[in-house]
Amino acid sequence: MAIPKSQKHQIFHTLETQIASQKAVLLITTRETKTTLNSAKNSELRSNSRKEGVVLQVCKNTLIQKAFPASPNLVGQTYMAFLEDGSKSDEVTIPKIMIKVLDKDFKDYFNIVGCVVGGEFFDADKTEALSKVPTFNDSMAMIAGSINQITAKIALTIKEIPASVARGVQAINQK
Image (cartoon, rainbow, N blue to C red; front, side, top):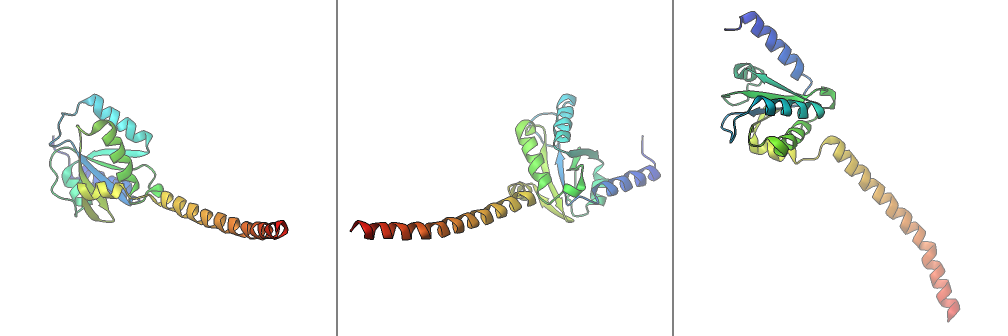
């Protein structure tokens, strides 16, 4: 049975509201996969995704293409994946989480279509590369570690000056 146009507008508005706060949205499909998806695997994927804070939503391809005009022609069942809390979203978090989840148990059931970041569509290969980039929090931790390492080296160097003077004085006393 066809969905009335008013209901399609309502669905589209809900979809727009959900993804407005997202910096990235991942698209996956069951088309051209090695194994046919069954309801048990579908439920398991949704459960695993929810544990990671990811919302998985099956949408009509035409609605996805209206929401993301840069996306390619979609065929088959397409899932949109985005973070439940959009404020924690950055450009690499959703690809990183979903690729980890898919690679663990679901690589035979789903294919990555791509990722929409800032209105630009990245194909599956670029999405894989994007998932290997450190997240914002990881980057900040690396910077903090580097700064901490520099201060520790400065402290050791300053501590070493009196120790080397003491060793020099001791060497002179022994002669």
